[in-house]
Length: 314
Ligand SMILES: Nc1ncnc2c1ncn2[C@@H]1O[C@H](COP(=O)(O)OP(=O)(O)O)[C@@H](O)[C@H]1O
Ligand SMILES: [Mg+2]
Image (cartoon, rainbow, N blue to C red):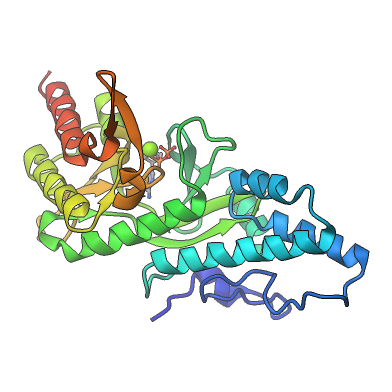
């Protein structure tokens, strides 16, 4: 079942409904060839570049086509978009309610709504705002350019959806990942709309901005997270790669209900597949070593746990 976000049903009739199938871009149905005027070709190139999935790709694609004749620029860009769509289709899980191509009118409306919105938190690469009208929604905006290493928004959103699907299968580890609702890759306003967690980050607890929620059992929560990450790495070939205090959250009201999360894993801004990690090499003691032999999401859980425990005991 495809779930539509609320705005979808609120759109006035004259706004084109976004296609929820994967990979629809304005290039679809476009007939290349001799029929386009010079001006139309130029417009086409502009549109294709503006809809590049990230600033980085925008720059890369612009450079790539710079010396080509106009017609070849269009063809090359369409091809790059198509390849991107194909790649995306293979990574986005089925049945995940992702909608792309959020209409401009909606983005404007949202910006207006969020003008005085409360900030829920901030990291190296983004900040998260609470929806003032909808208690269950939060929006993550990426800083441009990001300060730290960062996946593109599409990669981040797709990793969040994938890792959430897996977390839902491991009910007894009781790890939650915020539900991903939709995202916009609008070049001016890119954001991820997701479930707002009623939780505090471990970082806020350690740094004294929030209290450790009453009833938290640190070991039970962190053991579950560790089991989950071990399987995520080993059985599913996915790596979070940024497990730290700011990216782990604890529910404000840890529930006795056995199905609810005791800990949340957020921020898939660095998450990678095994294949991607495998190709990265690091220099260690003067020798080139595959990074995959050195990364461990589980190891990071223990470091955060120790810091939290030291802090809570003092
Ligand atoms: N879904 C959410 N609900 C509530 N708070 C959140 C949510 N996602 C993130 N936060 C808060 O925002 C902070 C920054 O989010 P994060 O995704 O880690 O951004 P960054 O990529 O910049 O590190 C988190 O440390 C947390 O405090
Ligand atoms: Mg973070």
